[in-house]
Length: 266
Image (tube, helix red, strand yellow):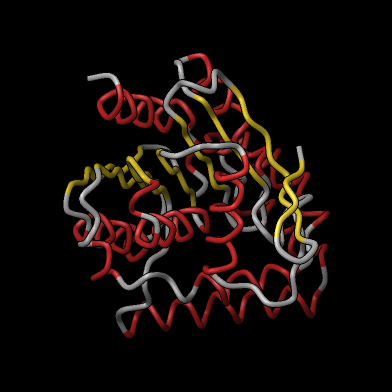
């Protein structure tokens, strides 16, 4: 389905499950599309949730805009929820989607029942945060110069593990469609993540997850996010790396279902 808003902007989205059930909004990661949630969509629908998934701006079939920001994604989500008459959500974001979910929860407290982030990024607080971000941006610039085949090769190597077959299959497909210039634009936007201190203003239940096969710094970033949230659980998922919903869906799905059950049904 397509939602039109603003000045000619479009959001490509799908909904699943009964409208009166608790609503769960799924936000995909950098360079992905909403179909990365295919397994979780079916699972959540089967467990009694109304699921909304969308292609975020500059991804998939939604509009690709020149000027991108967290505020632009915020408006995209907020107008979509209003158009389908959803008043409360549990918002679930992975990677880039986790940054957007944090920002949306902080700026729309009246709309959010619960927050889940996984393999996410946070505010660039420390010198090492900023250093690793510079390295990441240089890597993307390298792929921009070397071309798409180099980026496909990188994803091939990144997910060349027995536990990451689903992620490998997914990113081998989408890598050929990705525009590195768009990814750089998106990365610049998520670098302006909501200040961690603002997360302390959230009084909703939260779950922060990260894959154990990420580097120590990245795991620490996710731990910091959890510590700044007032009511949160922090979980390191075994045999997983970003995106954990694809590299270890069994553990990701189990943790997500337990958290949502505790929020809505206990």
